[in-house]
Length: 177
Image (cartoon, rainbow, N blue to C red):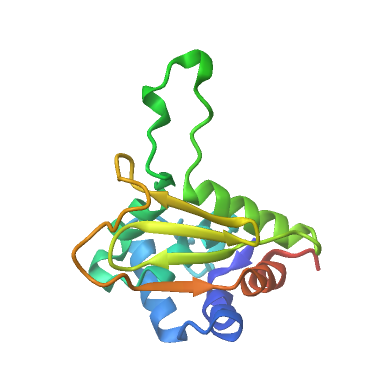
């Protein structure tokens, strides 16, 4: 467990996100109940899952009033927008979301110095999360989206965070000391 107060400095140092923006976002996520608040006079502690949500929220570029809704939407995206719930039970794979992948990578990076963490790209203009590895990219979109198609009428604007930066933040916040 890491103190929430340490996250803004770590994100600014390793990922380049302004501390002020991160503090506004984490305050909003606390208000909306996406992060667990601390007790009176006790600092808020977060785990790897909370950090994954906070990272998606900060990278989303959403305005502070909308950041909670946008974060939930991004966390719930699935590979290529394919809804596995409609598949027959005997061939249905487990449902995997962008949150599941990011949480797993952060958890592994905190415990294994050799863990591979993919670059994370969060699209601001529509809900899409892309994981980049040397083998290719995995696109996560809302259920029912048309994969590999432009999802809006605007310019595609995104934030890409190197996997090495995510791994460094995870090691510094959650690594064994």
